[in-house]
Length: 298
Image (cartoon, rainbow, N blue to C red; front, side, top):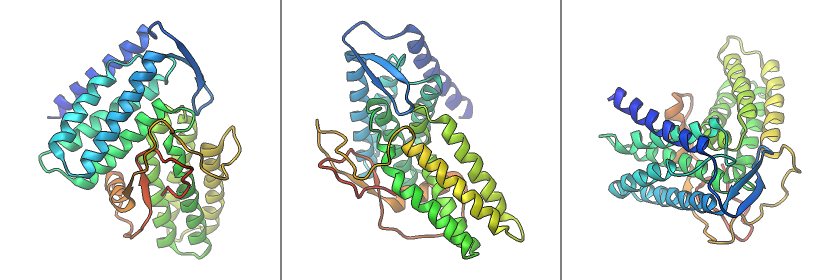
């Protein structure tokens, strides 16, 4: 089984890498800038393919959320096929392509498992949708909507440390780590690998501090400040911090959310943590909002 999954992953990676090397097809070229600041030029046909991939991923999320497993599996097969047909030159980096293919194969493993786990499937589907959205909407990717929740978790981490509450600090850090795992493929596609690596390093260092006896809360507080600064750099780097969310997509205005509890619990299971239990009424964006909605996030 492992060798089959590995072979499928290598085939998918090889196919999209070959398309990257072939270059963009001729056509009407559109020039824009992705979140990392990289200038890219893509033709209209490629943009149409990216938009179609994103719409298919949105349908996949809906089917998974509704528990329509057979339809979700069929849609995911379509996604895997579309991924191999898109030329990625000027769209994302080799690391971004690798992140996309790993996310697709990861979702395939989850929805194809004999013991289907709805929470894990929802998490994998949202993760994939955020990745395809980062490809099709490089100017305003949906992963930016997680800014408020991520910064809130960092603040709760620092507050827990100031209150010398190991449990509270660990809970906030675990939630933030789960969020970053959810966003990781989209961040890599957007060229945010450097920022992501810094955040992972800081989270690892803080986790080590919280596991030590006694806990050096001053170190945790100091590193929490660094974590907050790096999160702001990730979400706001190269532009002013947003004061109000703008409409992200006026072509097909849709507002749709998934409950936070399912996605985060699945993320925590994926990360291997069992450090805390929680309840929340927050939501996870999986469709693009319209009319300036600004209350969506973790």
